[in-house]
Length: 178
Image (cartoon, rainbow, N blue to C red; front, side, top):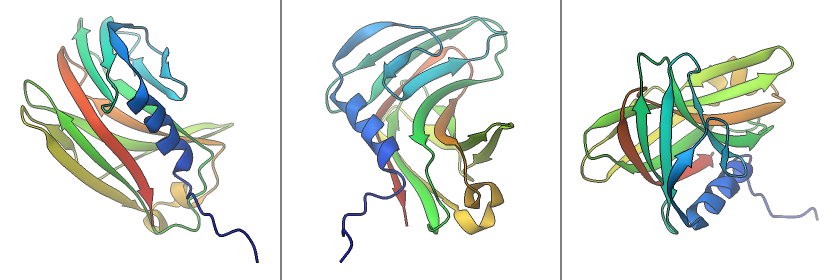
């Protein structure tokens, strides 16, 4: 009988998030592309000077403060997922608990990459963080997205945060496939 342990294609991403949830990092400057933990980093539009400070406490993911000078096109939190094979899955989903002192939004996206670049598949719902903690659930139907059915050299979950001065707390984030 073959092994009966199936961690699912989302295991690498959830492992990176679990490492972040154990991190004890005081509020400190974060440079674009710098790993917060292995496999989790932030990217900023290079044409709009952006400063970020990030804190992580055990049991939570991150608290982040951003100062964006000018008009930025993007500000993203990237979670590496490896070459996650979704071809045998029906859905890929996220469950995220967030909070912000001033209401703000972020757009979850699954990025699939290979030698010819990458393709972004955005989730249908925009997540909203309020002053009180809120829960965001969304899923992508794999068979309705050819880019997700096809193999990819690598995948990332990206939370595209509003590219403006502000702050956001991500208290928890879980990935799942069915």
